[in-house]
Image (spheres, rainbow, N blue to C red):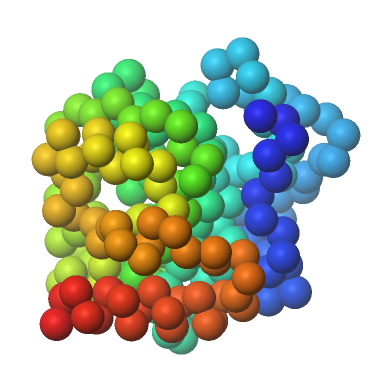
Length: 190
């Protein structure tokens, strides 16, 4: 897992540690010191912690004018033991919502497992963005993780599936990716 880096191809457009509105503003990264772990596996030092023991992230892009954020995730999404959704909602989403963000793209190809608990924070996040004509989209999550979301009956809080499951998102600039996703979402909502 230590070889899996967060996507760095958009650093010319946005860097969370240089964004004064970001919770990761002024964060210093090491390329050589591996200190964060998921269980007993070290992860690349470029991933950001939201104080979860099993789920880490990288805010890849935020557009405050068009009101969206693109966030890449890695690890095990474990609500049962570590209440990861609470941490994601309180530590990351709430701050972005405070700055007007109402559309979230969560990239989950490196989310290996999901362990559910209750749906309170999912419902709260959904209501927060829906009240502002927003949405939460899951991009490239593994099939078994999406299945576990459905089994836990929380999949209705997200836009998932179809072309969102197989999008080669790294080939696009962030604005183009968002436009493509937004078009797909609007077709489903409309």
